Image (cartoon, rainbow, N blue to C red; front, top):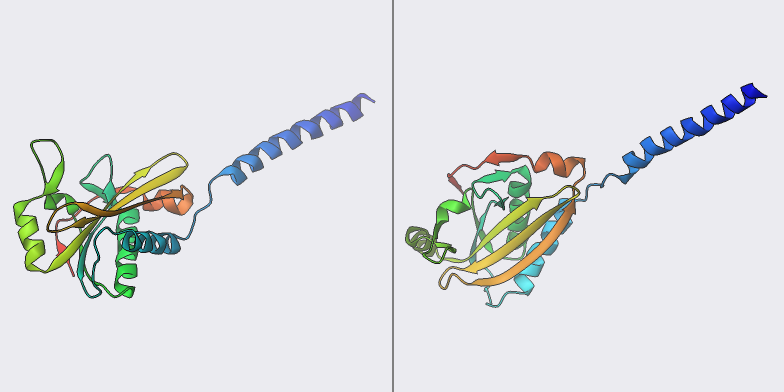
Length: 186
């Protein structure tokens, strides 16, 4: 009789332990496919734009950076910006990608970032119509992304969109920060 109680208690404790372990494993966020998320973000930017951008316009897209450290990007920031660039290209726009967006900006007297005169001149000399910039913020269970499309002439935001991504195993690896490089690529 005592043996049966010990076996019963042992089995109950074992089931709680195993349930707890499996509960934690299944409670972790699952990764999502970033491609459709990025494509939807690009579609939102284009459809919500306050300025009509004719097809074949040149759009400059910068690597997205960590909101807390604007000189840091990650594989996540680079792949999402590249996927946005692909979606713009597939929608009929010409694309130029740049790696380090913070070199394009200077801080104004009021504390806001604005295009440096050199950057504005360079973008205009290339015939760019808009600049797409983005920031991401990794959280404990979710990464948040904000993307803005900026008119080159007025420096005003003409479109903006947000999305979030669960912090699954792939997202955690992609979000590990790395210093950006200031080289431009085509």
